[in-house]
Image (cartoon, rainbow, N blue to C red; front, side, top):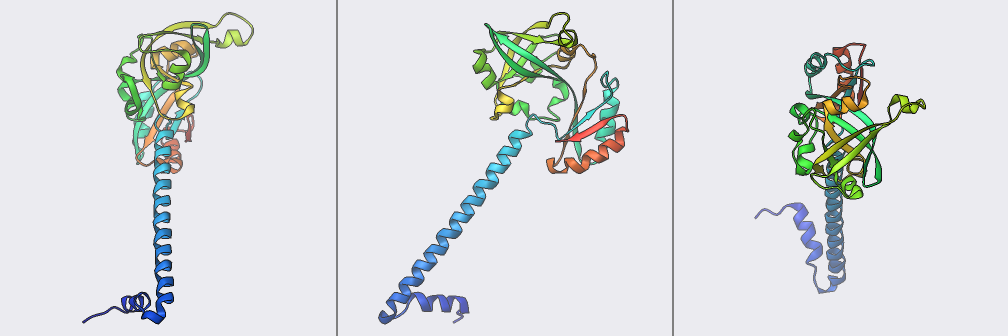
Length: 255
């Protein structure tokens, strides 16, 4: 009958005669300790890998893998620039955006926010915001609708719910220069999202691309493009290829 050497040696030390009971006991305790150590190591590695994956997924849920920004005045032909970027291997999505720093208020309570203007038709190609919507739909952010989707923490801080009116105040260049008055607009809360990160849930508000451009007043064109790669870790190398494809007049940065 076949007996592998490793099994023979192992059984020799765990099934000793009575005078070797102490040796057998030590062997069993040693094997139990090794088994527990390996089990603990596997558990810790699994937890850390899961935590890393979850954290990475939440961080890039609303963050672009790469960004293409043009000269002052916005991207006048962003569709053409997007087509050139999409032609680069590994790029699977491109969407225009406008970012505006503003104050968001309700009933005298003011909070600083980043207004992120998006195009609902193509936003899902670069972000996973729809997967994190607690209430509402991304399609509610139509140009001129004055609708807004805010983070859950921000909604709690302002005491806002779906259908509530929020006041948006944008300083503008004239106010920063000591002249004029801030630009004020009223938006309606049409959705609430929850990413699970303070950076997003407490200081980010999504509006339509056109509404954000109107508030910014610098240009009615998108500020730039947000790109998504098939593999987020390919973004640093892929950004160089995108820069070569779109031309020197555009600045490409990765996450």
